[in-house]
Picture: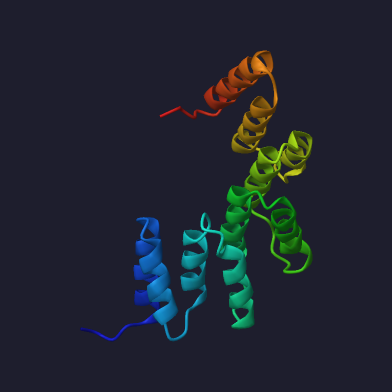
Length: 175
């Protein structure tokens, strides 16, 4: 068998993670002699729902690997799924101010989802409007979905109609 390279290790880790084999991805990652940024990103994304992402991010920094936009998106997704509002917002703020990384649309949408899930629909809407593009359909649908969860039946029906209209205007289907 040919010698293992960082690329081959990373490819296998990412494949395990994408197919839901989180333990195998982590086991292989832990066996890696010198994980590279892509391997760290794969294991961060894979561990988003398990709650290990924050600890992995800290370990990544201790190991001297600087996180990039993808690394932080994986950790922010974890914060969103686990309801860690303060931590997710702090990471979002540190993107620009501490790490000089321009937030991507996905970072904004992740924080919008996090704020909406926590019940702060007003802040989610403000952030959507503050996006460089003024917010896109995905961001606004996320806000509307959060709002519909927080409101009564009448408002839910209105939000559902607005979401359908936004989808149709942007060519999105409900597949």
